[in-house]
Image 1 (cartoon, helix red, strand yellow):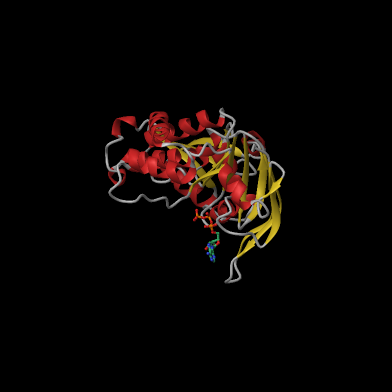
Image 2 (image 1 turned 90 degrees about the vertical axis):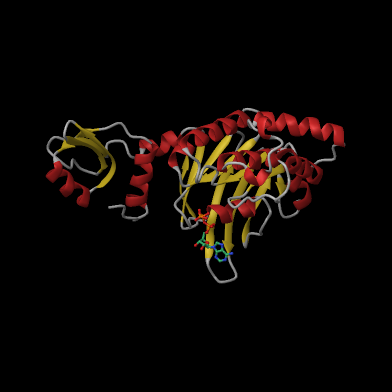
Length: 296
Ligand SMILES: Nc1ncnc2c1ncn2[C@@H]1O[C@H](COP(=O)(O)OP(=O)(O)OP(=O)(O)O)[C@@H](O)[C@H]1O
């Protein structure tokens, strides 16, 4: 699916503008929306899935204006909101079957086949008889993906997919999304976790205070911080001093010293050398230099 977003603005009734003149083009594959809490990611996603209306601007999905073709657009979208919850008393397969009844016209026999296919795809077939509200946090998120996929959407919108998941579940969840994005489904995921983007998305945007602070590839964002990431080995005293002056992004204790990586325009220490930048470095750099948000 091709999505063209032009001049999108959302002002809530209390006067707060959560999305400011956003212009983006999103193609097939996986697109990451990165930004700190409160940046406007959820507001943006709710507008995208027609759950709330923009104040101004347009969104075209494969050429269709989402305001003029709301019903049609809704059949093309699967949505997993941040605060997704289950009805109690439904088993895992029953929950998905219920979602299938709402979003497909499949007959009972076809639905059961489809439900089990999807449960298998997200690794939940073994727990199909378990009550959905008794699943672990990671399993619930995976069941959430399955319900978003049951109507065979062309666009999958996922808000903060890995928040609260342990590392193993996080990797598993990312892998499911990567598989999906190879099946001609456009996936938009919002997150404040840099690793979710760097390991899955070819294109991304960074939102801050409702406006687009960066758009392009993760590599493009990383290039902007090249030359500003330093590493140096410090003793306790030096380390305590440097961490009050610079944005330290990682610290590893090595042989009684501290192996430190930090962001700085200029060399922070006579023994400091350049380090290879990654997306986390770029995120910190953007927050500090472009957006004026201090992390020290
Ligand atoms: N219904 C609303 N009425 C008024 N202000 C709102 C409403 N919903 C969100 N906001 C405000 O809009 C801003 C953006 O919120 P939003 O939830 O879209 O951000 P976010 O990037 O998804 O953050 P988070 O990850 O914390 O949810 C915040 O300042 C929030 O308080």
